[in-house]
Length: 553
Image 1: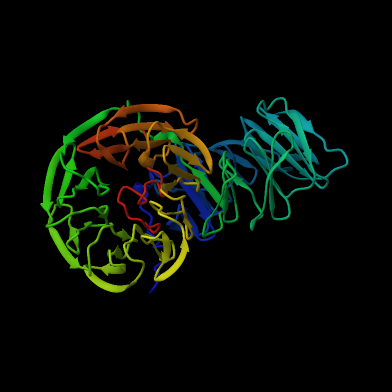
Image 2: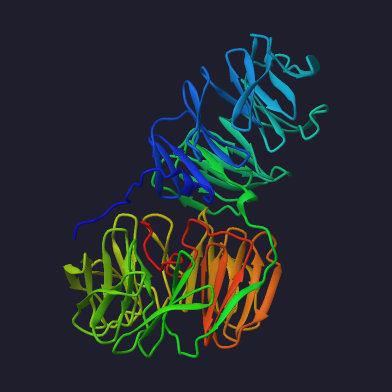
């Protein structure tokens, strides 16, 4: 079977406003696994919640497309750039001249209106044109300096010394380390020494070590990036398929304000065993009696009746809604409810399909995997009979499924026994496999959230427990949204795992999350505002609000 790799999309500036994490690589900028712009850039930074790319002779606003010409710009911290001996301040998307610095100051850093750098073998701090303090390493030669989360790191030929610089007028000595190549502070000391990351707590106790493939530590204040690795603050390691040269994180400025409230409701009065999907504020629902409905703002837009039972999740592609039915057929509709095509398979279809941006993948109950394109079968092969989960598509296009006995299938090859899991999740190529009878979701940094019985586990640690079994969940950027078997819905903040909101929605079965709206679906349908936004990760059981079940979207 031909493998389809990640499709690189052209940059659409307006679509970037609600993105969160951007990665600078050797050939461009990625938003998670989607390449949003090609090219070679020196740095990537965030100022006023805009992403800027630093080039040799200009600074590009990635969000608006505006380019600011400046000769040899070097980002020196906060919102300042150095060009030769001149410092400029970036404000309102314009560069304003700030001041000229002596030509013999190197490794310049702007920090809380202080100019800090290396001058005549000493560290100097200048404010309002006056030298406020100096640090003289005596018989040591300064190699470089760096400021990370308020900590000044001084690298010399004999070791690393770190100072607390939260009050920039009075640096306070913290600790001394042997020679290292790089340093970051994320509440713990992160050292890079000979391609090994070492993380120490404030008492200099070693918490973590790992060999890596990079030579520069990058931090967003909480997580560490080096080579193609991300090390979260919980010490969870995730790999990317590219080398990370820089990171820009958009903070919470674009999270909408307002109260959590029910926006609308709809009396469905149907049995639903198929996970719904949402797109462009339209919620698509399928019932066991074959009804497919489209709802918008509490109003029925259209409905279509299929001849038999629907239990597989609905899936949304670029231009259609896909439904599977126990009459052996796959159906495709446009968003106005018109039938585009139907394709018969060999037997009933209990599960929903996957879509990787090019092809649709479907599993029949008799254990055949079908690949479809433009309403036609282009490939099929045998897998395990009576599949209970899948298909799920990896970065390289491998197709994963789980048969009735709990065996994992990769394409047409039977792999290992993993038990009766509810889903797989992908951060890139390899699947994250949850424990039996549970499901897993991932955030933008690869943190694993396991939902097992009535508990939530983050990277193996129990962070929340409910009174009843958790039957569905989705991740927002700020919160976790849970639905339990007794109809309770919880909004849990992801920082401290406190309950922000709870309410009972009797007989509810599924959650769908799109554009800051949480849909709760059962005998009735509810739409609730959340004051949150969607991550770019595998944040729902079938990946996203469209139920694509593929990392390539």
